Length: 493
Image (cartoon, rainbow, N blue to C red):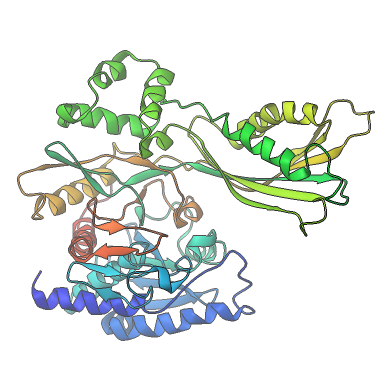
């Protein structure tokens, strides 16, 4: 792209990033909580940045702040495509800890620094920029293009994407879209002489459990051998000492990723991997991968993180109620029900040791246990299942839609400066997190999660000094542009 186009994108993305569209776990309804009003400012910025989009597309606001754009095609026989992103960002935290103010949208010549630069206003602005450019060329699509931008993805998407989905189903019906493209995936990574593009074609499940211990209080000058906090510390250690077993099933898309690496980058993979994939046991392969302690271990293993803990009121009184919450990202070979059984098994020795009564509550019913149901317990340990998201359906990577989608990725990245002379290998992978697509499962079987960025160009998502490389942002716009063009004339199979 020219220097003028680069400067235009700096202006566009910086302007969008200067609006602090933060969403919070404790947000109230859109008509009640004033913290949502910043999204009105964001909408005004979008209208100013993209005048052609806002004058020529059909625009509807859903649940006040969800944005639905429809670029109506001329051929109603073609299924529409759905491009999505989210408007909200996680809170930035103290500005003093950032190199540049988190909502300044500072450009250092290579990166734009700001909360939301990498997750995911770069995607939202990239999509709108591609559409604006197409309209400026008097482009009229054969295939309808729909854009859906939620506003609370970072807190579950219940107010945003979920209501946008309802609106889409009402207008188009279920299974009505050719494909959905959202943020996510694992970008484009280099292994040996090849570049691997990793769109997410599935997502791990999600499950939160809250554990609460209720014990007798008293004066801190006469403590028992273990206070309630001590007991819960023992429970936490027990859980962390029992990680979930890794397993690489034949249906896990990550297996195809590894097979691609052994084919295209044999010098960059572990020497044992090729033979193991041909004849190895599902558990043995996964165990070796997990022992290497890379982030990819979580593609074959359920993760468990104790993220919240509360207990005690004052330093001179024994705590009577202690609580912690555990977040799980469920691997493809397990389930929320399996996690329930694992937690009961691991905590049973703790229950016995401290003579507790265990009460386990899930959506499927309750379970009670302990050393002796007729004995007087020294406390009650309650386990309660909270939010559950099932493992996502796996999108196919052997159909014609994937062929056009992956072929477009290859064309774009093999023509970049860093990709010249290299083979780009698109391989569907699993996401450890979840995106707004969890609300769009009923729209299509072809769901892809892919933020088009090479490794090292999209940094510190959700962290201090989040930033996005402008070259990668421009490459993303090329991908959105080419996808729209390539699918516009393509005949649905």
